[in-house]
Length: 142
Ligand code: HEM
Image 1: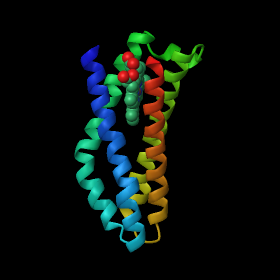
Image 2 (image 1 turned 45 degrees about the horizontal axis):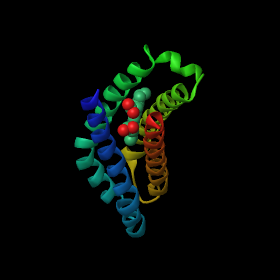
Image 3 (image 1 turned 90 degrees about the vertical axis):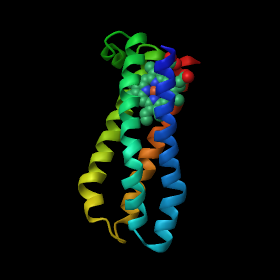
Image 4 (image 1 turned 60 degrees about the horizontal axis):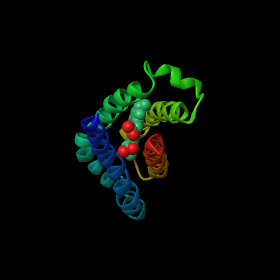
């Protein structure tokens, strides 16, 4: 249980930290210079540890959730604060996949100066969702 939590927190540091760096330093520079290459270059190197971090997050998160609510899916009834937090984490995970897939399929392949603001909106949403997952996670214990 302890090592699961440590791995979950390691994944959270990489996922949330990487997206904050992207949103707060890389995106503003790219927008100022109108150069989408900066975002593409960051994504290319970050995704080598960012994607495994998200996978680690999902595996350890589902494992932890299963220890609180066996079978996990009953949490979707949101009948108490713990189940509500777990249900929202699942909903936000789904939202992360949808927004990520949309960016990867429809925006990144033809990323240019005009489409940069759309990319920035996707990065903002993914980062806000990651922060919400972190706050929800902390609320489980407290
Ligand atoms: C971007 C994705 C995620 C982030 C950033 C994140 C972050 C966190 C953080 C910071 C904690 C606090 C740990 C503590 O209290 O010491 C936590 C706990 C938790 N997370 Fe996540 N999490 C993510 C995804 C998930 C997913 C997909 C699930 C599955 C439902 C999940 C389930 C849990 C559970 C059950 C806990 C409570 C663990 C405990 O306190 O024993 N998480 N999460």
